[in-house]
Image (tube, rainbow, N blue to C red):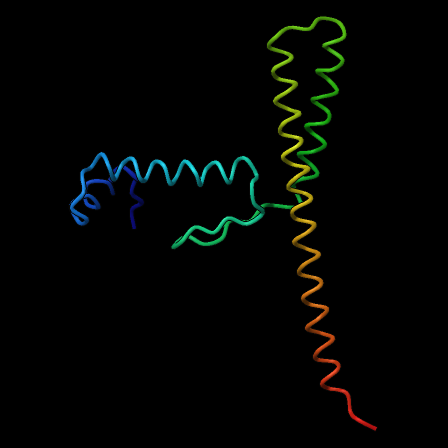
Length: 135
């Protein structure tokens, strides 16, 4: 099986659907731009893409990234005390935004884990309640 690029699917899709190639290209680029944004900007812990599956956030790597971003923010804060430039300030703000995204994702993952635990506990309680013998 040889993988195909997205551009190779535009013409056949346009012919199959009787649409212009430009419209099909615009639709696919818009869709994949949105998918990339969801994955890279850590909007959701799980991203479902039909016919591809579920892409899950690696929750075990989030703390590593948070530590890395905090270290970089501390470095640029120290640099800002001696000589602050617009570029260094912009880089520092970028790291702060990334750290905020990671912390938000950690909160979402923790909420999702708590929901799963609660559902599992309710299921286990129901099984236990129904399986006990009456005296």
